[in-house]
Length: 470
Image (tube, rainbow, N blue to C red; front, side, top):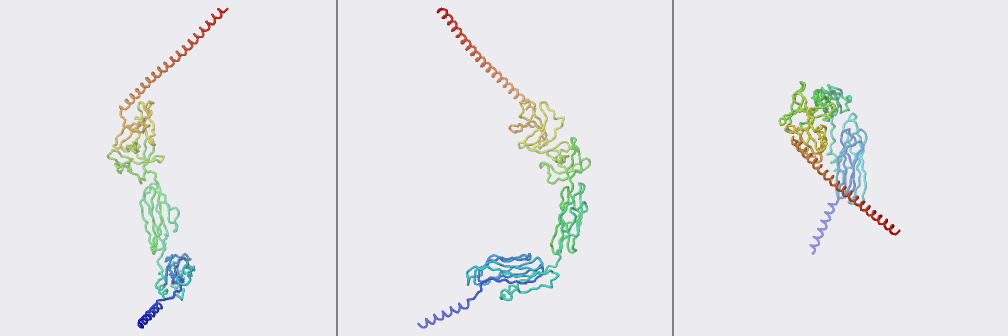
């Protein structure tokens, strides 16, 4: 029995020893320290926040235009100390400060939420006035763990390479920069006449250690041309200067068609042949080579011209000259082309030449003078095989049918039949009307006759009755 009590006493003593050895006293709360309070512009300060035996919600901020990177949000330090580091890189010379604020709730002692705000001031010096890195510890009472952490954080070394990336000059061989060159202005415009095909760009950097790219002779297209000149500083930073060169699109080659002056369009960006059968080529117009498209399938060549109203269109080009306008359209799912109809071919007996409106398209064609065919129109169109054809358009149903010589005869027969039917119906109506009028007239006359006869007989009877009574 004594041995049992001795064993129990030993266990109690052992348990008490373990409790005493593992227990630590924590002072719940937060504290802030800095790796340095005096730096040169461009260097970085490391701040360390200690969170002990509490749950903390943290916000951070820096004055002096300092950029802050590091932890934020919530920290849970139950029975221990946790550290949060922040790196601040000030961008202005002068004094500044770094502040961490928030609220924490201690795990031991008071259980109420405690708000806090910890701030450390620092001084930022210019490079010329700095005698080197000046580091001082902001808190002599920082524990050994904090000291170890701060020592491990190294201040970034100053980049002594030049950051000058501006141009000292920028010029062009043709035209004038607008606005006039300034190192701080990065966008320019140059306007050139239609005959300019190249330009040389020259530039020089302010800093001899910087490099310049994007200069030299440049090929010019009609319209808008954009070039970029880059100045790269010794430290790698880049400034770009944009030059937009506008070359006048006024045609250099002209021709005439039907008394109208047409110019060869020079800017063909986004312009393609009307269909896949047309391939790019060149043709000679008045001894000058101009862009064109040729279709072997249609055996046709076309050019792209602009008229005096600045309207651009394709035109047929045959035997070295323009012969017709060439406009691709689609009617009732049929791909076709509008072409000009020569004046000598415009006169057709029984038809009147005019401009038709079909599916919002203006198409040259004819209408019938005979009112019996007022719903029909005739057009003369080029098909995708290059052949010309007449098509009859019915307006009420918007239908399209291939026209032949027999159609007109059929229409005349249909019209005559309608006319004949109309005459027969008219005669029938006249007959019916006449019969009705005759019947009504007979009835009226009969009524008047019998009524008169009745009155006459009555009058005679009265006469003789009076005579007999007398």
